[in-house]
Amino acid sequence: MSAAALPKAKVRAATAEDFDAVYPLLQELNSTRFTREIWQRLFTNLWQQDDWCPGYVLDNGEEVVGFLGGLNSTTELNDEVHTVCNLTAWIVKDEYRSNSIMLLMPFLKRKNTSLTSLTSSPEAYKVYKKLGFKDVDSECRIIYPLPSITGKYRVISDREKVLQALSQQEEKVFSDHEGLDVKQLVISDRKEHCYLLITRRLGRGHIHKISNVELFRKAIGAVSRTICKSINVKSLQVDERFLEGQKILLSRKKAFSQPKQVRGLLPPVLVDAAYSELSVLATK
Image (tube, rainbow, N blue to C red; front, side, top):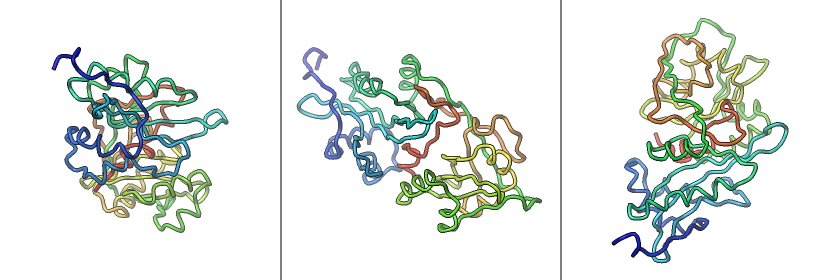
C-alpha cells in the first residue's frame, strides 16, 4: 500500500490497556529473553505515580502502528525537583516509519524535564543527536574481583542494615525496586556510605546507581571481590564517567554499541539507570 493510501496515524498518550496492541511490535526488537510478562512492566505503574503514562502510541484508527516508551523519575537539581524521563523502546511499523518522529515530539515539549536514552539503536541515536541530545558515555569498565588487603571498607547486603544506612531519598529508590530483579547494597567506610543498585546478566553485575561517586571511586577496587561474592557474579560493570579514568587493577574498558545520551539540564554524573529499562526489564 502506498503512503498516500495508508490510514492517517495520530499520536496519543498510551495507557496500560494498550499493551496487547503494542506487544507484537515489541517482539520485533529481537529481545528474545524478554517474555510477555517482562515487557508488560513498561505498561505497569510500578512506582504508583499520580501522572503515570507509559509513553505514546501511533494509532491509525484501526491499529497501533508505533510506540515510544518513557519511564519517569525525579531528582534534585539546583535545590529544585527535576523530572527525568528515560526513553525506552521506540518501534514503528515499516510503512509508518516516516511518522516516527511524531512519537518523540510530546517528550520534547515537556518542561523542566531531562530526557535520557541509554539503549538506543543506531537509527535512534542519530535522530536524538540531531535533536540536541548530548553523549554522556561511550564506554564502561569491566572490573574483576581482586582480594583486598585493607579493612577500611565494608559491604552491607543485609536488607535491614542496608535500610538503616540509607537517606530518605535513597530509601525511596530501594523501596521502588524491591519487586524487581535487582540487588541493592551499601559500601561503607564507617563515616559515609555509598548505595548501589545492581542488575545481573550472564554472570556480570551491572551497576546502575551510585549514590556517592567519590566514595565509590576510592573503594571499588578494594570491595569488588566482596560485592561479586555477595551477588553471585564473576565481574562488575560500571559506566566510565563514574570513574573518571581512575586506574583499577584487573579492569578493562568496553565500548557501548551506541553512546548513552541526555537532553536537558541533567549533568552526566547524575544520569543513571535506576529508573530505566535496564533495571525494569532486568533478568538474570
